[in-house]
Length: 64
Picture 1 (cartoon, rainbow, N blue to C red):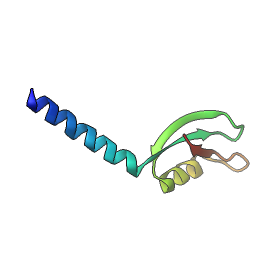
Picture 2 (picture 1 turned 60 degrees about the vertical axis):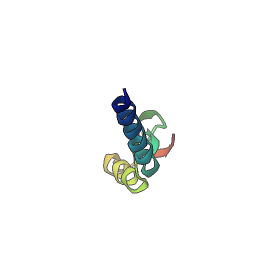
Picture 3 (picture 1 turned 180 degrees about the vertical axis):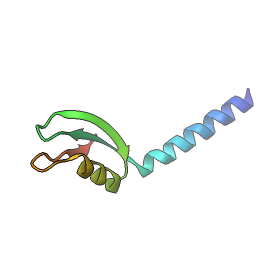
């Protein structure tokens, strides 16, 4: 039983630590429609949206 609680505590600690490094974002297409969520760093979300955008249709993001 102690082993179970130890494993649970380690998993909780690791997931809490990783959440501090990333922010979750709501992604919108050029029409303003929410098209999904993504959890990553500020620079990663900028790169992702830029790669998905096309001339005249820029994807945007905001913090979830």
